[in-house]
Length: 140
Image 1 (spheres, rainbow, N blue to C red):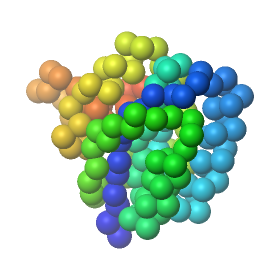
Image 2: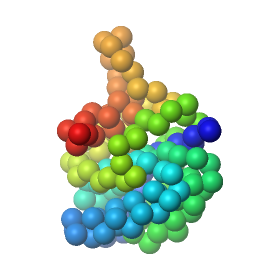
Image 3: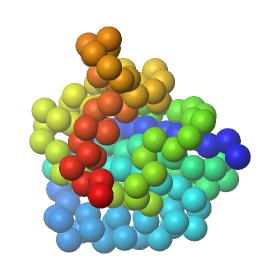
């Protein structure tokens, strides 16, 4: 079954507490599990960057919820496309607090593909490289 992936950045409409973020993730995770979607949400206190992946029908359901959310605005789609396998299979959804520098590195990375680079031949990390580096401490 082909999988679709989307990465976007947006501005939070207000500063969310950890409690509010955990509630958001619990609700999103429940929907994502049913939809077969996995992903990761970065938050720097003012902005979100989310990467999520799954089957086309599940992605449509999840993305509609994201686009209709009042918790953020100014959504910029960084990338959208098909992936041959899951890049973030670890969680139905997980949030990671980042600082402004980490967020900017991830958001302004190369999002032309969902490829992770390996080896030292690639001096500039891709967006997926940055996400995987941020997620690595939380992967069991």
